[in-house]
Image 1 (cartoon, rainbow, N blue to C red):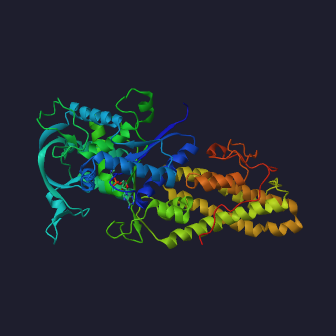
Image 2: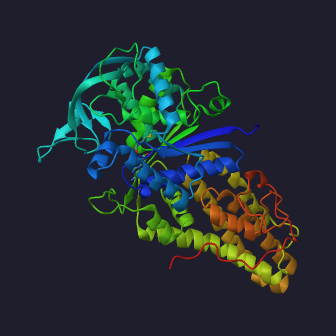
Length: 530
Ligand code: ME8
């Protein structure tokens, strides 16, 4: 295949409950990235799924009186359903860490780390937070008024854990990690969060407990290892197998396969800010130990808060993705999440903010311009797109601005600056609205019909460029707009074929609309929120 490969992943969700709008934010942003790259000619592989092992899932299952696998299956199906039916996520594989090939991959990376001399048997004694699936040092915890001990950073309860455990020699990787960060400043973003990681590593790393013996819901540690013999059955610490899902999704452990060579290393891991240490410290260290290439980039997004408050079951402010898509429509939700907050920062949403974006950016700036220009074409140009006459400086200026959006978007998407790409696109739409108002084609209708035709063609052509570029964010609405403009899905902008609907590749970006193609009476594509 001649297309360049692009492999991206989301974090895999714990299937101990239903997904909320914060999870949806991550799935949608990764989906937007995947769609952009596909439209831009890449052979994309997009992995998402569920992180099914560990004490957290086991404890929830125990409370419900079912097996962890039953719980995981039920919730994995619920999550997949949200991806498929509510959010339209275009993943290529929904991986479950209970999938058979994932056990093979996890055991294979374990063996490689043993072979590298990085795993040894010892005893662990310390604090563990089941909710975070994470160990804490004594000085990272505090005793609160209720007498319980909690992790300072995350506020979750910790319990004393003392057991035989395998350890990973993380301490040996401090220098190599710092060298990675120095030589690859693009390895993680945003810079503020990357700097937190760097400072943490500079402070020194302790070896990491990577197996458990006091419960069995995990990937079994391979026996007969030189890492130290034991009578006990160990399961892997859930984060060891969880991170390995990215390799499983690329065909590991078959490192000689066409698929693995094409997919690995991953181009992009998209994750939330609470799990940056796992992805920027543990993960590259495991891969270095296993002799595997490192992912090219970890993009750390912020958290979504409900009107400034952390979403939590006890506060009762957790929003289900379907509640939003039913209220505002899927494309408006996708647009809001990517346009409203700079990716990488936390965001706080309110009903008013979503409605504001929907009505001003979508209904007014985009929907009205499309509706007005296309209606005029239907009424005044015999239902066919007019051909442009000689272009004025104003015509050329707005066309040039629209043409510049592809490179601007590419640059922004490369850094997951989604809001910047959209901001620039809407800036150009603002200019296009000003152009339309100044040129006043409804007056030209009476004085200069040819000039009216040119203005309507220019407006339609600007809309075509915008519609192409917003496909990743609003696939359904953008497709309808491209259909309305008579843009053929095959990339021949001149031919009209209303039934030929679907994604239009960016390779057609430069193919301007050709006058004469029929235009139907437009249906509203971006309705106001009443
Ligand atoms: O962390 N806003 O799973 P998870 C934005 N299984 N993002 C949020 C969020 C919010 N309010 N709440 C959660 C895990 N997330 C592990 C990952 S990856 C090898 C293993 C994000 O179900 C969170 O930051 O707790 C993470 O990226 C993802 O949702 C899954 O969270």
